[in-house]
Image 1 (cartoon, rainbow, N blue to C red):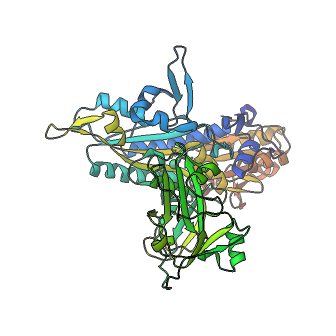
Image 2: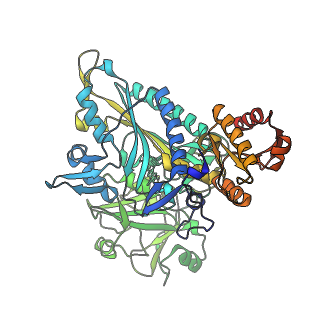
Image 3: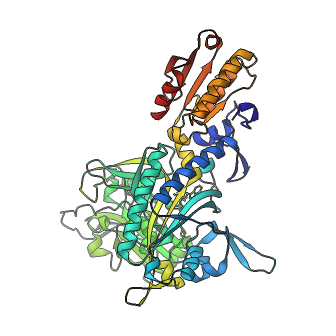
Length: 571
Ligand code: ATP
Ligand code: MG
Protein backbone atom coordinates (compact mmCIF):
# COMPACT_ATOMS: atom_id res chain seq x y z
CA UNK A 1 0.00 0.00 0.00
CA UNK A 2 1.12 3.53 -0.81
CA UNK A 3 0.37 6.45 1.49
CA UNK A 4 -0.79 8.51 -1.48
CA UNK A 5 -3.67 6.01 -1.84
CA UNK A 6 -4.42 5.79 1.86
CA UNK A 7 -7.11 7.70 3.73
CA UNK A 8 -5.34 8.32 7.04
CA UNK A 9 -6.27 11.84 8.14
CA UNK A 10 -4.01 12.49 11.13
CA UNK A 11 -4.77 15.33 13.54
CA UNK A 12 -2.25 17.44 15.45
CA UNK A 13 -4.85 18.63 17.99
CA UNK A 14 -6.19 16.47 20.76
CA UNK A 15 -9.96 16.08 20.20
CA UNK A 16 -11.89 17.81 23.00
CA UNK A 17 -14.30 15.02 23.95
CA UNK A 18 -11.73 12.23 24.18
CA UNK A 19 -10.81 11.38 27.79
CA UNK A 20 -8.52 8.35 27.61
CA UNK A 21 -5.31 8.00 25.64
CA UNK A 22 -6.51 5.21 23.32
CA UNK A 23 -9.51 7.26 22.26
CA UNK A 24 -7.39 10.37 21.66
CA UNK A 25 -4.74 8.50 19.71
CA UNK A 26 -7.18 6.55 17.54
CA UNK A 27 -8.78 9.82 16.48
CA UNK A 28 -5.46 11.64 16.07
CA UNK A 29 -3.89 8.77 14.10
CA UNK A 30 -6.82 8.79 11.64
CA UNK A 31 -7.95 5.29 12.60
CA UNK A 32 -11.59 6.08 13.25
CA UNK A 33 -14.16 8.82 13.46
CA UNK A 34 -17.20 9.26 15.68
CA UNK A 35 -20.50 8.64 13.89
CA UNK A 36 -22.75 9.31 16.92
CA UNK A 37 -22.50 8.86 20.67
CA UNK A 38 -20.91 5.43 21.26
CA UNK A 39 -20.68 4.63 17.54
CA UNK A 40 -17.61 4.81 15.34
CA UNK A 41 -16.60 4.42 11.73
CA UNK A 42 -13.29 2.66 11.23
CA UNK A 43 -11.01 4.24 8.65
CA UNK A 44 -8.58 2.03 6.70
CA UNK A 45 -5.77 1.97 9.29
CA UNK A 46 -8.11 1.21 12.18
CA UNK A 47 -9.92 -1.44 10.20
CA UNK A 48 -6.64 -3.18 9.39
CA UNK A 49 -5.97 -3.48 13.14
CA UNK A 50 -9.45 -4.86 13.75
CA UNK A 51 -9.00 -7.41 10.95
CA UNK A 52 -5.68 -8.55 12.37
CA UNK A 53 -7.16 -9.05 15.82
CA UNK A 54 -10.14 -10.87 14.28
CA UNK A 55 -7.82 -13.17 12.37
CA UNK A 56 -5.87 -14.13 15.47
CA UNK A 57 -9.16 -14.84 17.23
CA UNK A 58 -10.42 -16.87 14.26
CA UNK A 59 -7.27 -18.99 14.09
CA UNK A 60 -7.40 -19.83 17.77
CA UNK A 61 -11.15 -20.49 17.82
CA UNK A 62 -10.75 -22.84 14.86
CA UNK A 63 -7.74 -24.53 16.45
CA UNK A 64 -9.83 -25.15 19.59
CA UNK A 65 -12.54 -26.84 17.53
CA UNK A 66 -14.82 -23.85 16.99
CA UNK A 67 -16.78 -23.42 13.77
CA UNK A 68 -17.61 -19.97 12.45
CA UNK A 69 -21.21 -19.11 11.62
CA UNK A 70 -23.13 -15.86 11.25
CA UNK A 71 -26.44 -15.13 12.94
CA UNK A 72 -28.74 -12.16 12.32
CA UNK A 73 -28.27 -9.04 14.40
CA UNK A 74 -32.03 -8.49 14.57
CA UNK A 75 -33.71 -10.85 17.03
CA UNK A 76 -37.39 -11.47 17.66
CA UNK A 77 -38.71 -10.93 21.19
CA UNK A 78 -40.23 -14.43 21.08
CA UNK A 79 -36.88 -16.11 21.75
CA UNK A 80 -36.17 -13.79 24.64
CA UNK A 81 -39.63 -14.44 26.09
CA UNK A 82 -38.74 -18.14 26.17
CA UNK A 83 -35.62 -17.55 28.27
CA UNK A 84 -37.34 -14.87 30.38
CA UNK A 85 -34.72 -12.26 29.48
CA UNK A 86 -36.98 -9.96 27.40
CA UNK A 87 -38.20 -8.43 30.66
CA UNK A 88 -34.99 -9.00 32.64
CA UNK A 89 -32.46 -7.44 30.24
CA UNK A 90 -33.50 -3.87 31.01
CA UNK A 91 -32.63 -0.55 29.42
CA UNK A 92 -29.38 -1.71 27.81
CA UNK A 93 -31.32 -3.59 25.15
CA UNK A 94 -32.05 -1.63 21.96
CA UNK A 95 -35.64 -2.49 21.07
CA UNK A 96 -37.67 -1.78 17.94
CA UNK A 97 -40.85 -2.82 16.13
CA UNK A 98 -41.38 -3.92 12.55
CA UNK A 99 -44.24 -2.59 10.36
CA UNK A 100 -46.59 -5.24 11.77
CA UNK A 101 -45.91 -4.17 15.33
CA UNK A 102 -43.80 -7.22 16.15
CA UNK A 103 -41.07 -6.56 18.66
CA UNK A 104 -37.37 -7.04 18.02
CA UNK A 105 -34.07 -6.15 19.56
CA UNK A 106 -30.62 -5.50 18.15
CA UNK A 107 -28.65 -8.41 19.59
CA UNK A 108 -26.74 -7.48 22.76
CA UNK A 109 -25.65 -11.15 22.90
CA UNK A 110 -26.83 -14.38 21.23
CA UNK A 111 -27.51 -17.13 23.79
CA UNK A 112 -31.21 -17.28 22.90
CA UNK A 113 -30.75 -17.33 19.15
CA UNK A 114 -28.04 -19.97 19.17
CA UNK A 115 -29.95 -22.18 21.61
CA UNK A 116 -32.95 -22.04 19.28
CA UNK A 117 -30.71 -22.94 16.35
CA UNK A 118 -29.01 -25.87 18.07
CA UNK A 119 -32.22 -27.34 19.51
CA UNK A 120 -33.43 -27.69 15.93
CA UNK A 121 -30.26 -29.34 14.66
CA UNK A 122 -28.85 -31.54 17.42
CA UNK A 123 -30.72 -34.76 18.25
CA UNK A 124 -28.05 -37.15 19.49
CA UNK A 125 -25.08 -37.21 21.85
CA UNK A 126 -23.06 -38.16 18.77
CA UNK A 127 -23.38 -34.56 17.54
CA UNK A 128 -21.81 -33.16 20.72
CA UNK A 129 -19.67 -31.32 21.66
CA UNK A 130 -20.53 -28.47 19.32
CA UNK A 131 -18.67 -25.15 19.44
CA UNK A 132 -20.10 -22.39 17.26
CA UNK A 133 -18.94 -18.80 17.04
CA UNK A 134 -19.36 -15.59 15.13
CA UNK A 135 -17.66 -12.21 14.92
CA UNK A 136 -20.31 -9.56 14.68
CA UNK A 137 -21.60 -6.17 15.82
CA UNK A 138 -23.41 -6.15 19.15
CA UNK A 139 -25.64 -3.40 20.44
CA UNK A 140 -25.96 -2.22 24.01
CA UNK A 141 -27.54 1.06 25.01
CA UNK A 142 -24.91 1.72 27.68
CA UNK A 143 -25.86 4.20 30.38
CA UNK A 144 -22.60 6.06 29.75
CA UNK A 145 -20.94 5.34 26.42
CA UNK A 146 -17.39 6.61 26.81
CA UNK A 147 -13.69 6.11 26.27
CA UNK A 148 -14.15 5.55 22.53
CA UNK A 149 -14.09 1.86 21.65
CA UNK A 150 -13.87 0.77 25.28
CA UNK A 151 -17.52 1.37 26.07
CA UNK A 152 -19.49 1.98 22.93
CA UNK A 153 -23.09 1.23 21.98
CA UNK A 154 -22.32 -0.66 18.79
CA UNK A 155 -19.20 -2.83 19.07
CA UNK A 156 -17.65 -5.90 17.49
CA UNK A 157 -17.70 -9.05 19.58
CA UNK A 158 -16.54 -12.58 19.00
CA UNK A 159 -19.02 -14.80 20.74
CA UNK A 160 -18.65 -18.56 20.95
CA UNK A 161 -21.19 -20.95 22.50
CA UNK A 162 -20.37 -24.50 23.55
CA UNK A 163 -22.86 -27.37 23.75
CA UNK A 164 -21.92 -30.54 25.62
CA UNK A 165 -23.69 -33.63 26.83
CA UNK A 166 -22.66 -33.28 30.48
CA UNK A 167 -20.91 -31.07 33.02
CA UNK A 168 -17.57 -32.79 32.44
CA UNK A 169 -17.84 -31.97 28.74
CA UNK A 170 -18.74 -28.36 29.52
CA UNK A 171 -15.73 -28.06 31.81
CA UNK A 172 -13.51 -29.42 29.04
CA UNK A 173 -14.90 -26.86 26.56
CA UNK A 174 -14.37 -24.14 29.17
CA UNK A 175 -10.78 -25.26 29.68
CA UNK A 176 -10.16 -25.19 25.92
CA UNK A 177 -11.58 -21.70 25.59
CA UNK A 178 -9.63 -20.47 28.60
CA UNK A 179 -6.45 -21.76 26.95
CA UNK A 180 -7.41 -20.26 23.56
CA UNK A 181 -8.07 -16.86 25.17
CA UNK A 182 -4.70 -16.98 26.86
CA UNK A 183 -3.06 -17.64 23.48
CA UNK A 184 -5.08 -14.94 21.71
CA UNK A 185 -4.19 -12.15 24.13
CA UNK A 186 -0.57 -13.29 24.26
CA UNK A 187 -0.41 -13.24 20.44
CA UNK A 188 -1.93 -9.75 20.49
CA UNK A 189 1.08 -8.68 22.58
CA UNK A 190 -0.92 -7.72 25.65
CA UNK A 191 -0.01 -7.80 29.32
CA UNK A 192 -3.12 -9.40 30.80
CA UNK A 193 -4.40 -11.52 33.64
CA UNK A 194 -7.36 -13.92 33.84
CA UNK A 195 -9.34 -13.08 36.96
CA UNK A 196 -12.23 -14.81 38.70
CA UNK A 197 -15.40 -12.94 37.86
CA UNK A 198 -19.00 -12.59 38.89
CA UNK A 199 -21.21 -13.99 36.16
CA UNK A 200 -23.93 -11.41 36.62
CA UNK A 201 -27.27 -11.51 34.86
CA UNK A 202 -26.13 -14.19 32.41
CA UNK A 203 -26.46 -16.83 35.17
CA UNK A 204 -24.74 -20.17 35.46
CA UNK A 205 -21.62 -21.44 37.17
CA UNK A 206 -18.10 -20.06 37.10
CA UNK A 207 -16.48 -17.34 35.07
CA UNK A 208 -13.18 -15.63 34.33
CA UNK A 209 -12.54 -12.21 32.90
CA UNK A 210 -9.43 -11.63 30.81
CA UNK A 211 -8.18 -8.28 31.94
CA UNK A 212 -5.52 -6.12 30.35
CA UNK A 213 -3.63 -4.31 33.08
CA UNK A 214 -3.95 -0.54 32.59
CA UNK A 215 -4.48 2.44 34.89
CA UNK A 216 -7.36 3.72 32.76
CA UNK A 217 -9.26 0.43 33.11
CA UNK A 218 -12.78 0.47 34.46
CA UNK A 219 -12.33 -2.81 36.36
CA UNK A 220 -10.64 -3.04 39.72
CA UNK A 221 -8.80 -6.28 40.34
CA UNK A 222 -7.64 -7.79 43.59
CA UNK A 223 -4.68 -10.13 43.35
CA UNK A 224 -2.73 -12.08 45.89
CA UNK A 225 0.88 -11.25 46.63
CA UNK A 226 1.65 -14.87 47.53
CA UNK A 227 -0.49 -17.25 45.42
CA UNK A 228 -2.13 -17.06 41.96
CA UNK A 229 -5.52 -15.81 43.22
CA UNK A 230 -6.90 -12.87 41.23
CA UNK A 231 -10.51 -11.69 41.11
CA UNK A 232 -12.50 -8.69 39.99
CA UNK A 233 -13.48 -6.43 42.87
CA UNK A 234 -17.08 -7.44 42.17
CA UNK A 235 -16.21 -11.06 42.76
CA UNK A 236 -13.40 -11.07 45.34
CA UNK A 237 -14.58 -13.19 48.25
CA UNK A 238 -13.82 -12.04 51.77
CA UNK A 239 -13.78 -14.07 54.93
CA UNK A 240 -15.32 -12.31 57.94
CA UNK A 241 -12.82 -10.52 60.14
CA UNK A 242 -12.21 -12.11 63.53
CA UNK A 243 -14.78 -11.75 66.30
CA UNK A 244 -14.13 -9.26 69.08
CA UNK A 245 -13.27 -10.81 72.43
CA UNK A 246 -14.72 -7.91 74.40
CA UNK A 247 -17.42 -8.46 76.95
CA UNK A 248 -20.77 -7.20 75.65
CA UNK A 249 -22.06 -4.20 77.62
CA UNK A 250 -25.73 -3.29 77.91
CA UNK A 251 -27.31 -1.51 74.92
CA UNK A 252 -27.55 2.26 75.44
CA UNK A 253 -29.32 4.95 73.42
CA UNK A 254 -27.34 8.20 73.11
CA UNK A 255 -28.06 11.63 71.66
CA UNK A 256 -25.81 12.37 68.67
CA UNK A 257 -27.10 15.59 67.09
CA UNK A 258 -26.29 16.16 63.42
CA UNK A 259 -24.24 12.97 62.99
CA UNK A 260 -25.84 11.42 59.92
CA UNK A 261 -22.53 10.26 58.40
CA UNK A 262 -19.95 7.82 59.71
CA UNK A 263 -17.28 10.54 59.82
CA UNK A 264 -19.35 13.01 61.83
CA UNK A 265 -20.51 10.21 64.14
CA UNK A 266 -16.98 8.90 64.76
CA UNK A 267 -15.73 12.45 65.43
CA UNK A 268 -18.63 13.25 67.78
CA UNK A 269 -18.20 10.09 69.85
CA UNK A 270 -14.40 10.15 69.48
CA UNK A 271 -14.24 6.53 68.34
CA UNK A 272 -12.58 4.98 65.28
CA UNK A 273 -14.84 4.34 62.29
CA UNK A 274 -14.31 0.60 62.62
CA UNK A 275 -16.36 0.66 65.83
CA UNK A 276 -19.39 1.92 63.92
CA UNK A 277 -21.85 0.12 61.64
CA UNK A 278 -22.90 1.77 58.41
CA UNK A 279 -26.28 1.36 56.72
CA UNK A 280 -26.95 1.66 52.99
CA UNK A 281 -30.58 1.51 51.83
CA UNK A 282 -31.48 0.35 48.31
CA UNK A 283 -34.64 -0.37 46.37
CA UNK A 284 -34.70 -2.77 43.45
CA UNK A 285 -36.72 -2.50 40.23
CA UNK A 286 -39.65 -4.18 42.03
CA UNK A 287 -39.48 -1.45 44.73
CA UNK A 288 -38.43 -3.94 47.39
CA UNK A 289 -36.44 -2.37 50.20
CA UNK A 290 -32.94 -3.74 50.79
CA UNK A 291 -31.12 -2.50 53.91
CA UNK A 292 -27.44 -3.38 53.98
CA UNK A 293 -25.14 -3.09 57.00
CA UNK A 294 -21.34 -3.13 56.85
CA UNK A 295 -18.64 -1.95 59.25
CA UNK A 296 -18.27 1.86 59.22
CA UNK A 297 -14.93 1.84 57.40
CA UNK A 298 -16.02 -0.76 54.81
CA UNK A 299 -17.83 -0.29 51.48
CA UNK A 300 -20.84 -2.23 50.19
CA UNK A 301 -20.38 -4.48 47.14
CA UNK A 302 -23.62 -4.02 45.20
CA UNK A 303 -23.05 -7.13 43.10
CA UNK A 304 -22.93 -9.25 46.25
CA UNK A 305 -26.12 -7.55 47.42
CA UNK A 306 -27.86 -8.37 44.14
CA UNK A 307 -26.68 -11.96 44.28
CA UNK A 308 -28.17 -12.38 47.77
CA UNK A 309 -31.59 -10.98 46.84
CA UNK A 310 -33.25 -13.23 44.25
CA UNK A 311 -34.49 -11.28 41.24
CA UNK A 312 -32.92 -7.92 42.17
CA UNK A 313 -31.70 -6.69 38.78
CA UNK A 314 -31.08 -2.97 39.26
CA UNK A 315 -30.51 -1.20 42.55
CA UNK A 316 -31.07 2.45 43.35
CA UNK A 317 -30.82 4.43 46.55
CA UNK A 318 -34.04 3.96 48.54
CA UNK A 319 -36.61 6.75 48.82
CA UNK A 320 -37.05 8.31 52.24
CA UNK A 321 -40.70 7.20 52.37
CA UNK A 322 -39.75 3.56 51.81
CA UNK A 323 -37.33 3.74 54.73
CA UNK A 324 -39.71 5.49 57.14
CA UNK A 325 -42.52 3.10 56.16
CA UNK A 326 -40.66 0.25 57.91
CA UNK A 327 -39.70 2.35 60.91
CA UNK A 328 -36.26 3.42 59.70
CA UNK A 329 -34.70 6.86 59.90
CA UNK A 330 -32.37 7.86 57.01
CA UNK A 331 -28.89 8.58 58.35
CA UNK A 332 -29.62 6.90 61.68
CA UNK A 333 -30.44 3.32 60.78
CA UNK A 334 -30.00 -0.08 62.31
CA UNK A 335 -31.83 -3.41 62.01
CA UNK A 336 -33.09 -2.93 65.57
CA UNK A 337 -36.79 -2.16 65.40
CA UNK A 338 -37.18 -2.36 61.61
CA UNK A 339 -40.52 -3.90 60.62
CA UNK A 340 -39.82 -7.24 58.93
CA UNK A 341 -41.85 -8.15 55.86
CA UNK A 342 -41.84 -10.00 52.57
CA UNK A 343 -40.60 -6.98 50.65
CA UNK A 344 -37.95 -5.91 53.15
CA UNK A 345 -34.50 -7.47 53.14
CA UNK A 346 -32.06 -6.84 55.98
CA UNK A 347 -28.59 -7.94 54.93
CA UNK A 348 -25.70 -7.81 57.37
CA UNK A 349 -22.08 -8.37 56.45
CA UNK A 350 -20.55 -11.32 58.30
CA UNK A 351 -17.83 -9.11 59.81
CA UNK A 352 -20.50 -6.93 61.44
CA UNK A 353 -21.95 -9.99 63.18
CA UNK A 354 -18.56 -10.47 64.87
CA UNK A 355 -18.55 -6.95 66.35
CA UNK A 356 -19.19 -6.27 70.03
CA UNK A 357 -20.02 -2.91 71.64
CA UNK A 358 -20.39 -1.14 68.30
CA UNK A 359 -22.34 2.02 67.46
CA UNK A 360 -25.28 2.04 65.08
CA UNK A 361 -28.32 4.23 64.36
CA UNK A 362 -31.35 4.14 66.65
CA UNK A 363 -33.89 4.59 63.84
CA UNK A 364 -34.65 8.03 65.23
CA UNK A 365 -33.15 11.31 63.98
CA UNK A 366 -30.09 12.41 66.01
CA UNK A 367 -29.91 9.23 68.10
CA UNK A 368 -27.60 6.21 68.02
CA UNK A 369 -27.23 3.02 70.02
CA UNK A 370 -23.98 2.35 71.86
CA UNK A 371 -22.75 -1.09 72.95
CA UNK A 372 -24.50 -2.84 70.11
CA UNK A 373 -23.67 -6.52 69.78
CA UNK A 374 -25.30 -7.61 66.52
CA UNK A 375 -25.53 -11.29 67.44
CA UNK A 376 -27.49 -10.31 70.56
CA UNK A 377 -29.37 -7.24 69.30
CA UNK A 378 -30.15 -7.45 65.56
CA UNK A 379 -32.90 -10.08 65.58
CA UNK A 380 -33.76 -11.81 62.34
CA UNK A 381 -31.35 -10.76 59.56
CA UNK A 382 -29.69 -12.32 56.53
CA UNK A 383 -25.90 -12.63 56.99
CA UNK A 384 -23.45 -12.86 54.12
CA UNK A 385 -20.28 -11.57 52.46
CA UNK A 386 -21.38 -8.09 51.40
CA UNK A 387 -18.37 -5.86 51.43
CA UNK A 388 -16.08 -4.59 48.73
CA UNK A 389 -12.49 -5.81 48.77
CA UNK A 390 -9.75 -3.32 49.58
CA UNK A 391 -5.97 -3.42 49.47
CA UNK A 392 -4.58 -5.41 52.38
CA UNK A 393 -7.60 -7.70 52.80
CA UNK A 394 -6.71 -11.35 53.24
CA UNK A 395 -6.58 -13.63 50.18
CA UNK A 396 -9.48 -16.10 50.43
CA UNK A 397 -7.19 -18.87 49.19
CA UNK A 398 -4.02 -18.45 51.24
CA UNK A 399 -4.56 -15.54 53.63
CA UNK A 400 -1.70 -13.35 52.34
CA UNK A 401 -2.52 -9.65 51.80
CA UNK A 402 -4.28 -8.72 48.54
CA UNK A 403 -3.16 -5.87 46.31
CA UNK A 404 -5.41 -3.83 44.03
CA UNK A 405 -4.77 -2.88 40.43
CA UNK A 406 -6.84 -1.65 37.49
CA UNK A 407 -7.60 -3.33 34.21
CA UNK A 408 -9.68 -3.44 31.05
CA UNK A 409 -11.93 -6.47 30.61
CA UNK A 410 -11.28 -7.60 27.04
CA UNK A 411 -12.90 -11.02 27.23
CA UNK A 412 -15.00 -13.18 29.49
CA UNK A 413 -15.71 -16.91 29.65
CA UNK A 414 -18.74 -18.38 31.43
CA UNK A 415 -20.18 -21.78 32.13
CA UNK A 416 -23.93 -21.60 31.66
CA UNK A 417 -25.00 -25.13 32.58
CA UNK A 418 -28.55 -25.82 31.43
CA UNK A 419 -29.98 -22.36 32.13
CA UNK A 420 -30.85 -21.69 28.48
CA UNK A 421 -31.17 -25.23 27.17
CA UNK A 422 -33.64 -26.21 29.90
CA UNK A 423 -35.71 -23.04 29.53
CA UNK A 424 -35.79 -23.34 25.74
CA UNK A 425 -36.00 -27.11 25.34
CA UNK A 426 -32.61 -27.71 23.70
CA UNK A 427 -32.29 -31.43 24.43
CA UNK A 428 -30.53 -34.47 22.99
CA UNK A 429 -30.79 -38.23 23.36
CA UNK A 430 -27.95 -39.73 25.42
CA UNK A 431 -26.33 -43.18 25.02
CA UNK A 432 -29.31 -44.75 26.84
CA UNK A 433 -31.83 -42.99 24.60
CA UNK A 434 -32.83 -40.64 27.42
CA UNK A 435 -33.61 -36.99 26.69
CA UNK A 436 -31.35 -34.43 28.47
CA UNK A 437 -30.80 -30.69 28.18
CA UNK A 438 -27.46 -29.73 26.61
CA UNK A 439 -24.86 -28.24 28.94
CA UNK A 440 -23.63 -24.89 27.68
CA UNK A 441 -20.90 -22.30 27.99
CA UNK A 442 -20.40 -18.89 26.38
CA UNK A 443 -17.25 -16.97 25.61
CA UNK A 444 -16.94 -13.34 24.42
CA UNK A 445 -14.13 -11.08 23.25
CA UNK A 446 -14.55 -7.37 22.57
CA UNK A 447 -12.53 -6.81 19.41
CA UNK A 448 -12.59 -3.00 19.50
CA UNK A 449 -11.94 -2.96 23.22
CA UNK A 450 -8.92 -5.19 22.66
CA UNK A 451 -7.61 -2.68 20.13
CA UNK A 452 -8.13 0.16 22.61
CA UNK A 453 -6.47 -1.84 25.39
CA UNK A 454 -3.40 -2.42 23.22
CA UNK A 455 -3.05 1.35 22.81
CA UNK A 456 -3.58 1.98 26.52
CA UNK A 457 -0.59 -0.31 27.10
CA UNK A 458 1.50 0.84 24.17
CA UNK A 459 1.95 4.58 23.77
CA UNK A 460 4.30 7.46 24.51
CA UNK A 461 4.23 11.23 24.03
CA UNK A 462 4.63 10.79 20.26
CA UNK A 463 1.79 8.35 19.69
CA UNK A 464 0.91 4.67 19.49
CA UNK A 465 3.36 1.78 19.89
CA UNK A 466 1.74 -1.30 18.35
CA UNK A 467 2.69 -4.88 19.02
CA UNK A 468 3.72 -6.12 15.56
CA UNK A 469 0.99 -8.75 15.33
CA UNK A 470 -1.81 -6.18 15.31
CA UNK A 471 -0.11 -3.09 13.86
CA UNK A 472 -1.87 -1.56 10.83
CA UNK A 473 1.38 -2.16 8.90
CA UNK A 474 4.49 -3.87 10.21
CA UNK A 475 6.95 -1.76 8.27
CA UNK A 476 6.96 1.78 6.94
CA UNK A 477 9.31 2.84 4.17
CA UNK A 478 9.94 6.61 4.10
CA UNK A 479 11.82 8.34 1.32
CA UNK A 480 13.00 11.54 3.03
CA UNK A 481 12.35 13.54 -0.13
CA UNK A 482 9.81 11.86 -2.37
CA UNK A 483 10.22 14.63 -4.95
CA UNK A 484 13.73 13.28 -5.54
CA UNK A 485 13.26 10.64 -8.25
CA UNK A 486 16.35 8.65 -7.25
CA UNK A 487 15.30 8.47 -3.62
CA UNK A 488 11.75 7.48 -4.49
CA UNK A 489 12.97 4.75 -6.83
CA UNK A 490 15.32 3.41 -4.17
CA UNK A 491 12.49 3.43 -1.60
CA UNK A 492 10.21 1.61 -4.04
CA UNK A 493 12.81 -1.12 -4.42
CA UNK A 494 12.95 -1.55 -0.66
CA UNK A 495 9.16 -1.54 -0.49
CA UNK A 496 8.83 -4.22 -3.18
CA UNK A 497 11.48 -6.42 -1.57
CA UNK A 498 9.73 -6.16 1.81
CA UNK A 499 6.38 -7.04 0.28
CA UNK A 500 7.90 -10.00 -1.50
CA UNK A 501 9.35 -11.17 1.80
CA UNK A 502 5.82 -11.23 3.19
CA UNK A 503 6.20 -8.14 5.38
CA UNK A 504 3.06 -6.02 5.62
CA UNK A 505 4.51 -2.75 4.34
CA UNK A 506 3.43 0.82 3.64
CA UNK A 507 5.39 3.21 1.43
CA UNK A 508 5.07 6.86 2.47
CA UNK A 509 5.40 8.27 -1.04
CA UNK A 510 3.68 11.55 -0.12
CA UNK A 511 5.50 14.67 -1.22
CA UNK A 512 5.37 16.06 2.32
CA UNK A 513 8.27 17.38 4.38
CA UNK A 514 10.25 14.63 6.12
CA UNK A 515 9.33 16.05 9.54
CA UNK A 516 5.63 15.67 8.81
CA UNK A 517 6.10 12.08 7.66
CA UNK A 518 8.16 11.14 10.71
CA UNK A 519 5.59 12.71 13.04
CA UNK A 520 2.79 10.73 11.37
CA UNK A 521 4.88 7.55 11.53
CA UNK A 522 5.39 7.91 15.28
CA UNK A 523 1.76 8.88 15.85
CA UNK A 524 0.38 5.89 13.93
CA UNK A 525 3.02 3.70 15.52
CA UNK A 526 4.38 1.35 12.83
CA UNK A 527 6.72 -1.01 14.68
CA UNK A 528 9.63 -0.56 12.26
CA UNK A 529 10.58 2.26 9.90
CA UNK A 530 13.07 2.27 7.03
CA UNK A 531 14.32 5.71 6.10
CA UNK A 532 15.74 6.29 2.64
CA UNK A 533 17.72 9.55 2.40
CA UNK A 534 20.37 11.01 0.05
CA UNK A 535 22.98 8.68 1.61
CA UNK A 536 21.01 5.66 0.46
CA UNK A 537 21.30 6.75 -3.15
CA UNK A 538 25.03 7.57 -2.78
CA UNK A 539 26.32 4.65 -0.68
CA UNK A 540 23.37 2.28 -0.30
CA UNK A 541 23.14 2.99 3.44
CA UNK A 542 19.68 3.00 4.97
CA UNK A 543 18.33 3.54 8.45
CA UNK A 544 16.10 1.15 10.42
CA UNK A 545 14.31 2.63 13.39
CA UNK A 546 12.40 0.66 16.03
CA UNK A 547 9.34 2.56 17.22
CA UNK A 548 9.19 0.99 20.69
CA UNK A 549 12.78 1.60 21.76
CA UNK A 550 13.87 4.35 19.40
CA UNK A 551 16.99 2.31 18.54
CA UNK A 552 18.48 3.02 15.13
CA UNK A 553 20.47 0.65 12.92
CA UNK A 554 22.41 1.84 9.87
CA UNK A 555 22.56 -1.03 7.41
CA UNK A 556 23.63 -1.62 3.83
CA UNK A 557 21.26 -2.39 0.98
CA UNK A 558 22.24 -6.07 1.12
CA UNK A 559 21.80 -6.44 4.83
CA UNK A 560 18.67 -4.48 5.53
CA UNK A 561 16.06 -7.18 4.85
CA UNK A 562 17.68 -9.76 7.11
CA UNK A 563 18.04 -7.16 9.84
CA UNK A 564 14.43 -5.97 9.41
CA UNK A 565 13.12 -9.52 9.73
CA UNK A 566 15.23 -10.11 12.81
CA UNK A 567 14.00 -6.90 14.46
CA UNK A 568 10.35 -7.54 13.56
CA UNK A 569 10.48 -11.02 15.06
CA UNK A 570 11.13 -9.43 18.44
CA UNK A 571 8.36 -6.85 18.20
P1 ATP B 1 -18.79 -4.66 30.89
O1 ATP B 1 -18.81 -5.29 32.25
O2 ATP B 1 -17.52 -3.96 30.58
O3 ATP B 1 -20.01 -3.86 30.60
P2 ATP B 1 -19.79 -7.13 29.97
O4 ATP B 1 -19.26 -8.01 31.05
O5 ATP B 1 -21.19 -6.71 30.00
O6 ATP B 1 -18.84 -5.86 29.85
P3 ATP B 1 -19.73 -9.32 28.12
O7 ATP B 1 -21.18 -9.56 28.02
O8 ATP B 1 -18.90 -10.22 28.95
O9 ATP B 1 -19.48 -7.80 28.57
O10 ATP B 1 -19.16 -9.16 26.64
C1 ATP B 1 -17.96 -9.76 26.17
C2 ATP B 1 -16.93 -8.71 25.82
O11 ATP B 1 -17.46 -7.70 24.97
C3 ATP B 1 -16.39 -7.95 27.02
O12 ATP B 1 -15.40 -8.69 27.68
C4 ATP B 1 -15.87 -6.69 26.37
O13 ATP B 1 -14.56 -6.90 25.85
C5 ATP B 1 -16.81 -6.47 25.21
N1 ATP B 1 -17.78 -5.40 25.51
C6 ATP B 1 -18.86 -5.47 26.31
N2 ATP B 1 -19.53 -4.32 26.34
C7 ATP B 1 -18.86 -3.47 25.51
C8 ATP B 1 -19.05 -2.12 25.10
N3 ATP B 1 -20.07 -1.40 25.54
N4 ATP B 1 -18.17 -1.58 24.23
C9 ATP B 1 -17.12 -2.29 23.78
N5 ATP B 1 -16.89 -3.56 24.12
C10 ATP B 1 -17.74 -4.16 24.98
MG1 MG C 1 -18.11 -9.41 30.84
